[in-house]
Image 1 (cartoon, rainbow, N blue to C red):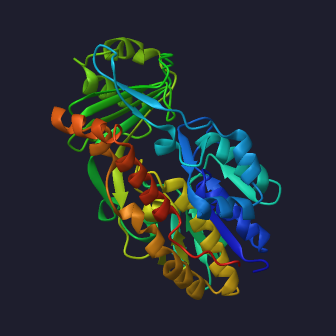
Image 2 (image 1 turned 135 degrees about the vertical axis):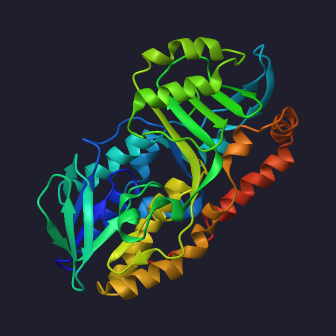
Length: 378
């Protein structure tokens, strides 16, 4: 694959993970990222099962990921008076290894920045497949031509929109929204529910983490103040410590609001353009996104290597090897589980965490999903 020029859109997890392997296999890799720099901190992500850990080990980063891990912690579910109702164990939300998204992104960047080109503060404006390459124009930089283009730019993928079609054709809204806010309430991992809404203080996702049921909302994903107002409106009249959190919301330095949605594509590739990670098989808060991104990067790069750079054969191999494994992202929705719409459903969800046999069966099922692929040694 010497001198194969590859453009990757997205510098979070999937993009730098793919950059690592493609650079190792001899490609000339450029990563473009809309944000002005690496996103630090952020919510916790996790790896679970032998497959995830094997890929991290083959990348040579497993021990460093362990060193930077946050450690899964138990989440205490409380009522409006702060009384304990149930405990969501750390292994349920944190897998085998839990690490902040920003820390993992920084680690992958450290392993690739010396040999791969990173372009921050820019985005792809157009893609033209010329038959023997892809002509790419950017919002800021001069046009360039690449052999391959990879969309590793999340559920709201710009590359997917340009190469496959509008987002509404591939992204299904699942009836809930989630939000992260930098409000440190120091409440030691407490989770509170009311019908159709949940708030967690001091948990693994963020200092303040929210999930609420809603009809589709029309808002600008880059307008923080608009997102702040939507979040405050969604939680007005709430009990427990919600009034205190809403009073502090205007001072929160960072608020991020997005839909809980699922990506449903019938193919991963279109010509010389291919999708990776959440852009291809995202399911918000589904619990497998980071593992799918890292394993998917390993398989995509490996299949391109096995095909000696023939993108048609490589992309077909990636689809063949990975689609069944990624089917876990086509199932379920975290919204109804985290923010049940009725008191009865809240009680039923809490009951699960009081039944160790049932909880153990659920954990074994997630392990089976996470390891349901035969990893090739490329």
